[in-house]
Image 1 (spheres, rainbow, N blue to C red):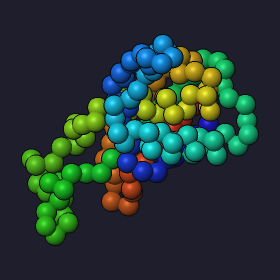
Image 2: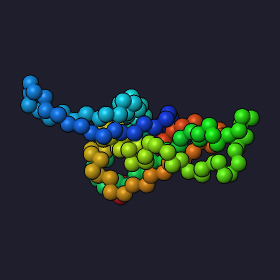
Image 3: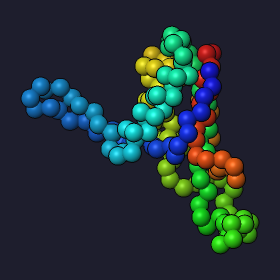
Image 4: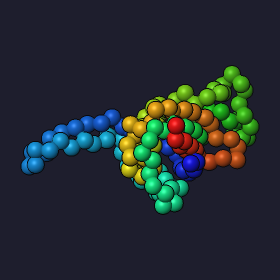
Length: 144
């Protein structure tokens, strides 16, 4: 299956756990503030892409291609590309690729696949938007 989620990908934050004093149960939270709305957008897109099919319950290969905006420093005031020396060919700034992928994996759990432990192969790419593109992530999931 393959689908695209439009929007600027947000990373999953570090996990923090604490014990609820009333129930004694451990509660795990994610400290990334923008993570929850982004995960909801990804989950909604996944539900539409699944189109009523049963979720996967087998080994999976996934590919996530994150397309992010170029920094403003890559363009001159007229909108032309800056000199090659000022322009980085790949997005090497935060957020890091693994945290972006973890947010997607979490959002797809229980919708596309039973658990993200089913992922046995993963291809991750972070690239810049082309002139005619807006930020998005392309998600490809294949059974092994």
